[in-house]
Amino acid sequence: MIKRIFILLAFLPLAAAAQDSAEAVVGRYLRLLNIEALPTDSMLVVSTTVSFHGSTDTFTMTRRFQTPDMIRVEIHKGDSLMTGLCTNGRNRYREFVHMLGWWVDQTPETFRQDLQAYDFRGPLYRWSERDITLSYEGIKLVKGQRMQVVRATQPKHFTRHYMFDEMSGLLVLVLEDDEVAGNAPRHPMRGNPIEYKVTHEYLPVGASLIPSQESFMRNGTLTIMESTVHFEPRNELLFNQD
Image 1 (cartoon, rainbow, N blue to C red):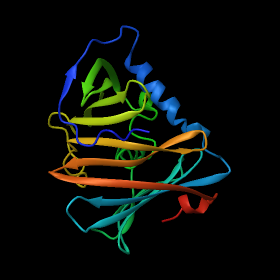
Image 2 (image 1 turned 180 degrees about the vertical axis):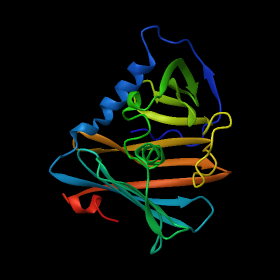
Image 3 (image 1 turned 90 degrees about the vertical axis):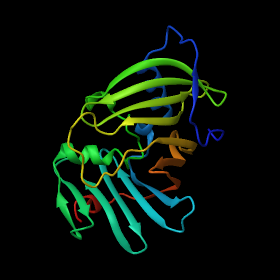
Image 4 (image 1 turned 30 degrees about the vertical axis):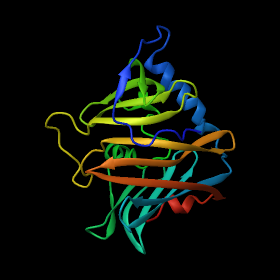
């Protein structure tokens, strides 16, 4: 588990290992997550408490996942649904718009882009299918910890530096260069990009790993996310209705 890093702001470049590549570093990380090993006979439920440093506000995020690609995300403040995303993985892509108070259809492309911020599998899952370009930037020292750094760019959406602990292979730190490059349109509900995101701990779930403690900084506010995991019986209907 990675617990040593909280707020990381500076790093010192070291020599890169010639045999390393972006694809190898990211591939090692995804093999450690081993999402494909999650049970297929039940529904995974990731329950997350979202709190803000210095504030009493608390949100609850519930992410339900059922193989092969059924996902339902709901974020509540108290009893009020603030944000929601739901797909059956085939032909139904729905988003809850809080200002309207109901669910609306989304294109598959817009839905998948919006889901990246909430998907427990992370934005690098199936990266090669989403026009993401990776480049390896070598080993850097971050607060005394050796990191393998991968730059990831998704045109019109983001440029990020992903930093993986050299010893464990796990993703620890994400630095956001820009959410949307140039003058490309921004999603009206997306808000400003994060300055950084840290994964503090991973939770073993069978043969898989799921981030269980994360934090990120946006607009000077530190957001803290703590997750637990359990399983429920499969429920196809849950992903086919609002």
